[in-house]
Image 1 (spheres, rainbow, N blue to C red):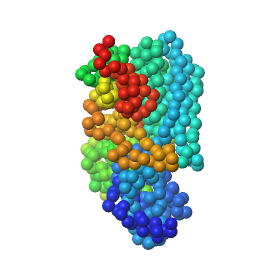
Image 2: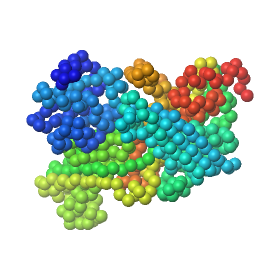
Image 3: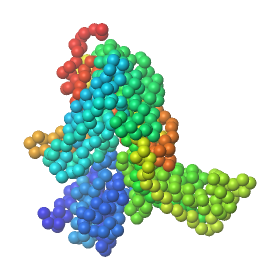
Image 4: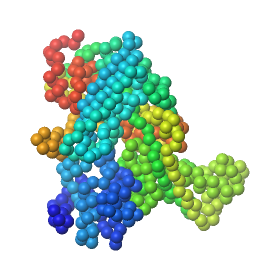
Length: 563
């Protein structure tokens, strides 16, 4: 098609259907893009490359992103089309995609075929561990779902085989979806660990505790911190794991089999390059500026509270500006590294401002105390507005990965516990309750962290029971490309969920002593539900999602009495 044909198409009937919206305009030879993107400092380079422009002439504005989960990590077709059309027409151009368009144009998570082999001695100690995966992507794509990412460091076993192979197929691009690797790899590994626990006659929680190595197997790298045992113990206690009967088909309520299952959680921790500018203004307020994005994870709140605490200001005296590439380049939202990376940059900027305040107060920075807009050192106390004397103190902080990224294995850990009911006649599974216990370094904001864990566990329910992309095998097109046919958990599918946050500090993970949490809540969650299904009705499935048509084929006699 010519550009004009494309513009005519884009300006047609899509305008009133609004799941995905992008708008561009040309200011001379500069491009301004308004869209929903997660990683702006990378996105600028991507679209500049697509259009053969200098990144310095591209500005992206995305102050509020909405849900991302990986689908908005990169620049896709609609942004490039809108930019070309804006150049041709010399006017702003808006592209609006329907839900079906979004499903078929953004990246997908790869399907996986996994083979897990576990060998243990009589005490349940792993002596052999094999985890092989087959994933897919387009012929020219570099990304491969890192299925074995957590298997490398989670459990012991000196004899190991970890492998990921890529099948080249013509479907939508496969890429990073929330918790790439662990989200799909952990649920399979944890289901296999449940089978091992039954085979050796050891409680599943105890089996995992017996197989926690002191250092990363093979590599010998020490762990920066590791709260897995604490998560297993506290989660089990809060959930009432001691009430579980290890033998399947032992509890029946009317037409429902009831069972319990559990799984470990693990997600790698990453710190990446980030910058942020903090300005302590003459009027005693503060301004935080960075192109870091907020996809509902709480970036605005967390960055504001870091600056507020460092500068002794209440949160209502701190303004946070995000999502604009004219601002210093933050980490972006992805990989669970946004808060710890950009947050550390904010902390560094505030440390420099505190040094300037200390100099104005004629004291050492270590002796400085700031609270409610008043700086104090010894017997000397002065309002910040007086110390600033009509001037603004502005500093830009930055952070880069250091030696600790190589010297330590860094990850967040947790444990899931689930109770399910399986209908003895239909095979329908209902999750009745879930508990998750998580350790991820310093908790920066308990409300937003808990929300992330809740969301991950809800997605775990979907991964276990309903969510699946269906492709037409004749031509590879996606069949269930809307929320009528792609089934995510609704309110009625989500039970009472308990989240336990385990406080710790991890000095190697980040200057804030915090680790990522955004993706941890999904890593292994579906495995706990799969294990609960087996405990309930004796059906051991090895295919996700565990829909009722798969369960019903193996159900025991619904009229049989409980043994």
